[in-house]
Image (cartoon, rainbow, N blue to C red; front, side, top):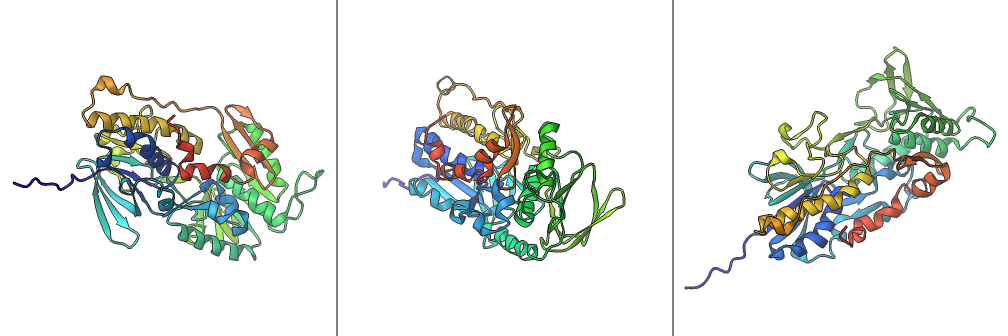
Length: 417
């Protein structure tokens, strides 16, 4: 009798999301997890992403102004290309969007970029789908072409705009206001506290004080820098109605009339909503989500305990920590150590030989850097206020683009940490 030599199907480690969390996790697993598993050829890492390009999303407030602001080949990087370094059968990229998670049967439904559908049975699942911005100018809400198309439309309207309103006093709103203010209006002289008669007045509408994660003195300094580039801040104000509906969201170049809570109105040639993000978790059963729509994630182990074995979450779609890139990157080694432990146990290794769970602990110290234009900025790191020059040096020069090359290529994860 001839023996059946059909190879067993590969165990699929599926990663949903192709940004900081997803790409980092894939590199780390391919470098440090799979090579240490029994029968390592029996595993395949799969990234599912709505965009085939990874991008430095924090750079959007400056990048939306012109392609000349950054080298485009550094701003956008092909995900399939950076994974060509691994054995061919060990990695697979799927250009598509997760539409339904069946965690009970360990299956995921995907709508591919060509509108066809695919179902994948997974052995392990990492949810790193991130969050969408209200404005399509400020993140990869679809693919890179969708983002570029919106940038082009915005830039065309910007050339004739006479007024700009930005909703949201968080980092993205303040950065966008600062970049647009300096680009259009220039900067007031050394001895002027504000720019008189700016070419295009820019208004930031904030429901509270701006930059709420930073101490009031730092937020006040940000307001002073904004005034020098023609930006006015309206604090404790709320936009109640937008006419026409869809201005700033469905169409980035539509003039809008904004009605405030007190009944006053603001007319804007360009309106940019920068009021936080929405987690991309619509494909997940609500039993696995927290009240704010993020995946209910064990804050110590990064497992999704309610989803069954070998399901994890990281990044802005997960509840283990506040959304911040530095907290995603500090979570990757912990996440991957626990994935490795779980895969070794599933392969039959004894509990005593695989060690304890690794534990994540969120760094809750005041840490946030906010460039305001090309030469100024405010912020703090690990609880210490930073001078404007340091904010410029670390982030304001190129909005972290100096860090992403090693991240996307996997060099940042060359050593197991």
